[in-house]
Length: 519
Image 1 (tube, rainbow, N blue to C red):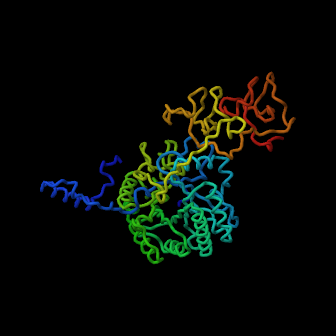
Image 2 (image 1 turned 90 degrees about the vertical axis):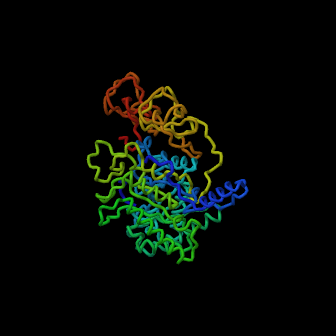
Image 3 (image 1 turned 180 degrees about the horizontal axis):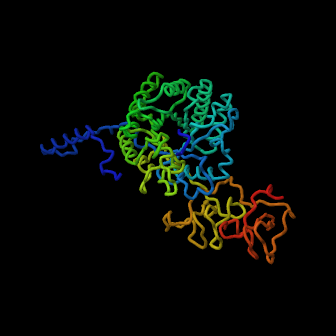
């Protein structure tokens, strides 16, 4: 996948002509014309299946975890909108360091602490939406390149999949990783091992290969990756084609036509590879083994733009053919660029570069895709609700008496919310009468059983003078209040420093986050 993150529908959309229905209609017509009761001649006919069964057709957009920040969570696209999410990308901490990280920038623990990734993933999982973790990508070192043994690589894959409770594993193999034979062998053996473990435990693991495609389909290197993974004993759920960055010579061809042509060729190739490996095609044929991932809006190639009309054309085609999976790169970019961004032809990590007029690519590409991978049912278990308790909750419990700045987290009725704007004495965070856009709060995810209780950082007594209600404080002054350190942002007197924990806008104080800042 690219390292940058840079219809009114017809009421008959998706319908196809069915010869079985025509035949049945003819029989009924003949029966009625002869005065025979129609019900006596209705035959029992199997429902025709073209491509993937509708219960197995799923949509999940890629979400670049490395672009997250606490301040962005109130408007994050990861837990909003249709379908599910493919978390991208897990890579090695270094060229020879087998530790799994998010884009080499964050450890798994960092992601949990900095932008609540574990909690947000748990929300997606509990809502029964498709969830996948993607390993690799175009940048950094895929784990198979850094882990020097099959066992260490399997351990790294297992750690990630278990942590996020995911049962869909996406392997985005491109660049140098396509040519590294030793890494390919390690990857295939590790994935086969992990898949066998999960199958034995009654927890099936779907494995998808995400590969680059050209207008004429998969490259030879991509075909080799599929063949060797099948030969290693991996039960591949499918091949996800990166229908993007074609750089075609004929500039008159639309990006959707390029993508559709590439998918036709890829379907034929996949069918050949499966047969050559001695594998039976599923009942839906090769289309049931395919996914498609366009790069929405402006692509890495300036003249290649995937518009909303392209999305509609691709969605119509994939629905007609019964393509199993639809994704997009990326959910982070699924919005119109703001007026302050003057270069829409330069790929942005946070907007599409095209005018979307209130529509989303996810809404178009995810239409009619309410299924789940392999048709697995959504979780039916009862999720425990953890009672609000100021002593054990991971964030302060919401109160109508407090002031809250944008980006502040609170707990309410066993759930975590983040403020979208400064507010006080407003509606409760889970007010069911408010539209999401009107609420000052965004639901992040549930309180988890292993959450660490919220606590302010403490400094040793005497680090700074104790705060005095009668003292006059100027910008830069530092004090201790209930064991925590605070620094004055401007002149004040008699204003308690601890208000700044929740109200970062109007409090004259700011919390000193780390003891290391003390002199």
